[in-house]
Length: 92
Image (cartoon, rainbow, N blue to C red; front, top):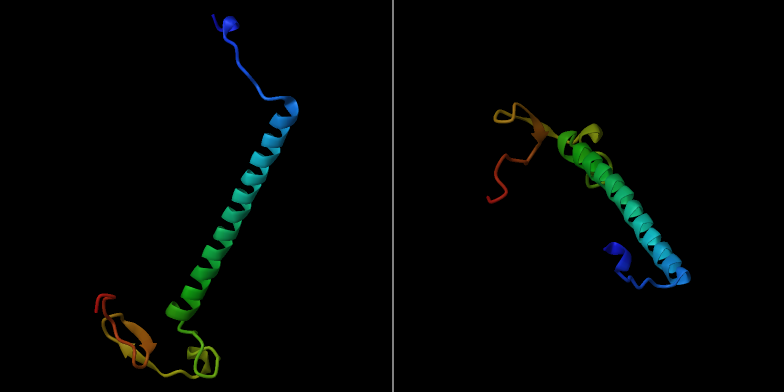
């Protein structure tokens, strides 16, 4: 039955152009995924450095904690946090 079905195909040159275009799109997607993965790692590293180690830039552009930034004990978190910081919800 399928032997009688007629299928119109574009010529080989057109098919090759479509294949090249789709390969370029696939390569672009792969490159973008790799870039996104690297950016996620950078964001995670900056978050850790600034908000867990408290080494965000101070007024002089130096790392806060290791440059003598004042730290105070927070009972709720059971750890030191920068002076003037408080614990709360984003909605507050």
